[in-house]
Length: 214
Image (tube, rainbow, N blue to C red; front, side, top):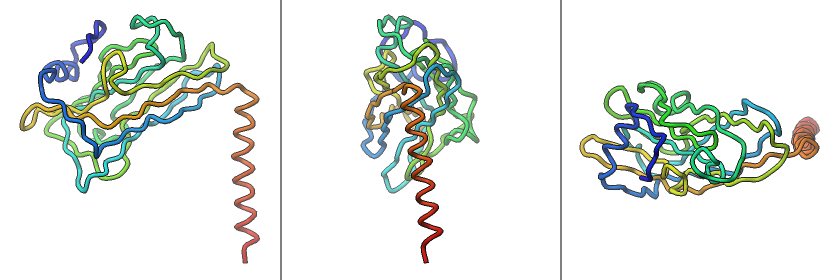
């Protein structure tokens, strides 16, 4: 785990620090594709959900989750130089496997372009189900940006290390998904309107075909 001067001593952060010397296992049955995210220009409050896929035959029990998401090199807040759209909030509870069993989403130190959040069960473990499941909802702010493309990272390339699950039951172990980093794109207004119009036309054509089908 990389040094994190802005890391706070929350319950999730404490669990992460306790697990530094624990064995880290790359679980190839867990795949996390960050994807290529498109956002509106000069607009706060844009929410994007992220998911992972468990291709194992059974669920995977976990106790806590450390979510690290970075835009570009993290920006000046973590010693980077690239100024990019910012991350304003992260929700690791709503709609995720931790929803019924958690102590709340913990902000372990948020710089504008670097989110380091964690969540821990209230008791016991929760299970990552087979198939796709949501891991986080992230709110972005593109105020001041009319266009641009930036790396969007959850892997070990982030300032705070890789996104990971942590267990202390029955012994301490870190489980790391197979992560493919993505991009964050701010689409200029005319191009965005063209994208929306294209989707609307595709939907209209599909409805017409359905209605004209015998």
